[in-house]
Image 1 (cartoon, rainbow, N blue to C red):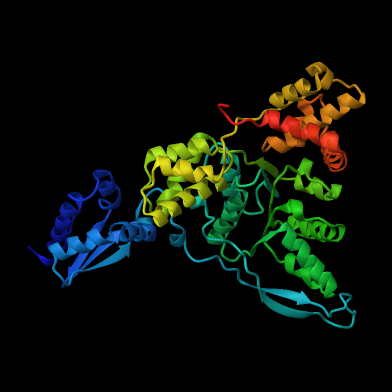
Image 2 (image 1 turned 180 degrees about the vertical axis):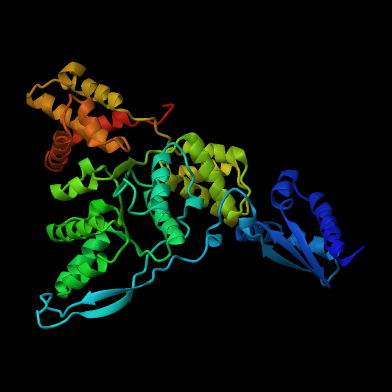
Length: 475
């Protein structure tokens, strides 16, 4: 037997011993995936799928491993681990394998004296600055699971990354509820652009960060430098644009937008609502958000949820049975973030408690995260509940009646639709509730919130209706 064959024979001997001492399912889950690498003197090196995998078998089977190695190799036996490079497996790109964090080139920016009003007799200085793109390499296209919920956004993003600023999708406006992958997709576009065009300057910033930077620039009398900085960007990604509030910051952003767009630079925005539903924004800015392409990211369907769970389990290097993944994909329907959080919590619980990843453990963990499964709430269900509560007909609720009771019932229905139905725009609610426009729905929601804070009886109406609408499935 050659030295190259010896480590395989020794490990096969170990597997035989281990297989005779533990449950077959645990053996197949935790020991079959391990590969022998080498045997040097009394040290056996094996390859495991992940750090989690290594920690689990060390915690759950340490005594068995010690006994087995002693019998197979001798009293001086030692075991070393190598973590398997995930990139050799086909389905997903492991984050570490994507490459280094994108870096921008150094940019020359003209700067002026602190007054912000340069004298005609003083030439501005030139400062070379490094603009950090602030892109997370984990958020690449390779780690993005495609489904009907985001297919259009991914297709548009790939077109933009191939020719930034030269497609009709400028700006690209991605909107949808929390946890649906808006940030991931926006950053994936930026990462792909940096890979194809390394010399382009890409910047990811949130709406709140832009507002804070603007306020600091005004306070420090550096507004001209602030504007010069942003006008050097080739690809500007603004996440959570709905947080860009304030007349001054919106005016500054309006000018940055105009300069970049007219210069053929690419603009990408994300928001938790459609452009038409943004509140407290200047109309001229809203009109520019609508120039390019607006794409709604919706809740993932079952197949997409299942694919995401498989991909994330693969990236973690953790063996998770299909029945567990099916359970999670069926149980959690809201968004990708909750799905990932549930899977990571499940893995962590299995590690800490030295338990296998099973459906029963998943049921226990998920119960602490998402609570009772909720039935799908629809506009029609809300309308029906409100009519029953106030003892009025559907036609009366949706009529143009201005009677106080009818108006309040209609406003509560609009408020509940906005609160309880994910990714339901104000325009959709208005169209379903009597053909109202989005401004009417927005006014209704504001009115209900104000009355709830000042009128105890009215607040009870809303609470009662919510309790009637949101009832766990099967009760």
